[in-house]
Image 1 (cartoon, one colour):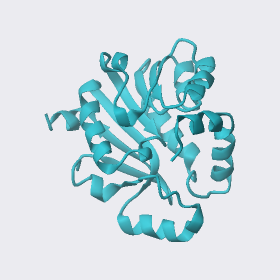
Image 2 (cartoon, one colour; image 1 turned 90 degrees about the horizontal axis):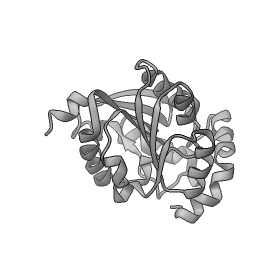
Image 3 (tube, helix red, strand yellow; image 1 turned 45 degrees about the horizontal axis):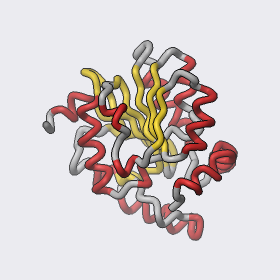
Image 4 (cartoon, one colour; image 1 turned 90 degrees about the vertical axis):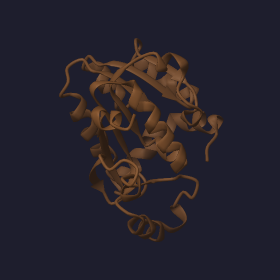
Amino acid sequence: MLDQKGFDLWAEDYDKFVGISEEKDTYPFAGYRAVLGNIYQSIMRKPKAVVLDLGFGSGRLTARLYEKGCTVYGQDFSERMIELAAKKMPEARLYQGDIAEGLAEPLLRERYDFIIATYSLHHLGDEQKLLLLQALRKLLNPGGQLLIGDVMFEDREKLEQCRREVGDAWDEEEIYFVVDELKQMFPEFRFEKISFCAGVLELDCEALRTRE
């Protein structure tokens, strides 16, 4: 798994790498643009939404939201990614930090209409994901939503099938969402499949609050 220095070095070529994988419809970024578009359209239903993006990278999605009048907050592991994103969103409030270690303190003091994470939570273990979801529920405004776009599979069988098909290209250090397993803890999650290896998970604020 890349450390902070690795992410910083990768930052300059990240969008190019993603674009090649998406264009060829190959793991891990097949359907990437459609995943981001799905989340973008969900947020656009609420004018001037307040958005927290966890792992925003170069700001490909959040910059579009920023341009449409959204108030943008974010946290990313890479200082270089933050520099690139800040050029596109000079008034966004962006913080450096490892999501696995929790959110930056200023982000915990805000409330959000949407909390989004695209291609970032697969760096967390399954238990870490669940703990993070539990923490995020407290940060949503009434009517808010949690939107996750990532490499994910409906069940373990489809994950294993993809692993076999991609062979050596499979990243053993990344831990992908398995939807039917996640729903054992959060049955309210709605799943939309985007490609053979990607999709969007959506959870409403009210569903999360029922667990308090």
